[in-house]
Length: 146
Image (cartoon, rainbow, N blue to C red; front, side, top):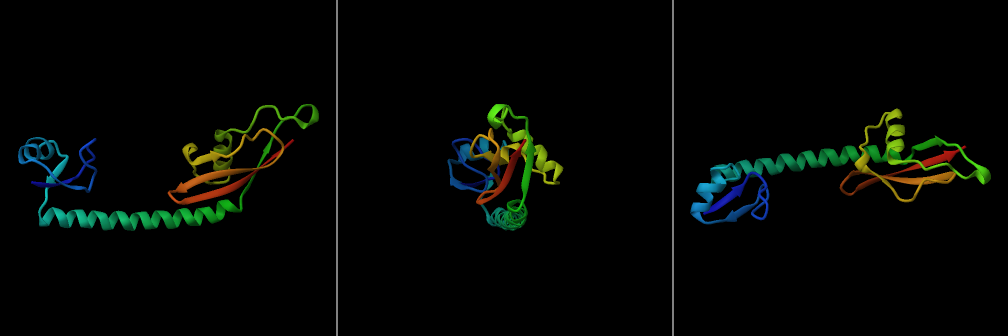
């Protein structure tokens, strides 16, 4: 019997995947517990409609991420820090501080999206990468001043 998975099931199938399984397993476990439905014209049409909706949503999200990338690439964040002898910075700028500075500028970016390529523990300009969407990465400049 062929089934269409409607939920991910570890080591069995992912949502939207079509697999051939034994009749008893399909009826008594997969369908009964809501992991899959029988493959037929009606369910195939639903699956196709869901795939089209997901593709449209993904395209919209990617376009928004690319527009945000254009804005963020121009952005320079300034961080004022205390320094010791020889302009040695006390501590370093953290991901949370970058997130808070972006929030002050009006951007809602999660900590998990921010990627520090180097430690921001010296004066000057530093690169901060932000993963906006798979394949869309913005790079902002962080200027550390005393």
